[in-house]
Amino acid sequence: VLKYISKRAKDMPKLPIEVIEGEVEIKQIYRNPTKHIYLINAKTDVAIKENTFYFPNWKLLINNLQYPIDFKNPKYMGVINFKLKQGIYKAELEFKNTKLRTISQLISIITITIVIILLLEIHIIKLIRK
Image (cartoon, rainbow, N blue to C red):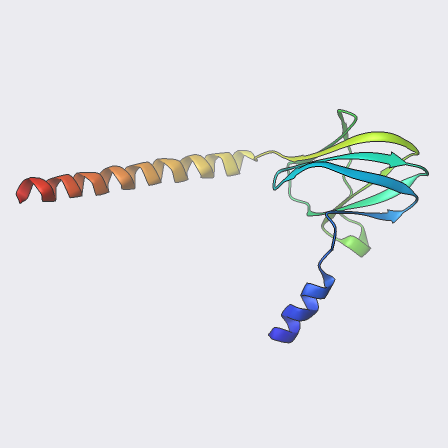
């Protein structure tokens, strides 16, 4: 197991975004788990790999316009890739909740609220009986 883990650790990307092809300068402006913003100066046509696994509802905006994501590249299967022509761009990658995730989160919040209310009621009943 340790050999597998150490081998996988070597394969881990060192940067959140990498150039696959072309000459480019990339400046990371903002990054959290669901939103990544970069300024990209593509000196040539470029292919870029954003080291995030694709999941439905990741959206890529290039200069505030929706742009196609390639996640089927055989060399980087499942990882977000995109190509740009020469130029200067603002790239914004954002994950929006799917309907299923939103419903699941709502169910979780309701369940946690009910459990807290029940625990408080049990605690209050125990205090009253003493």
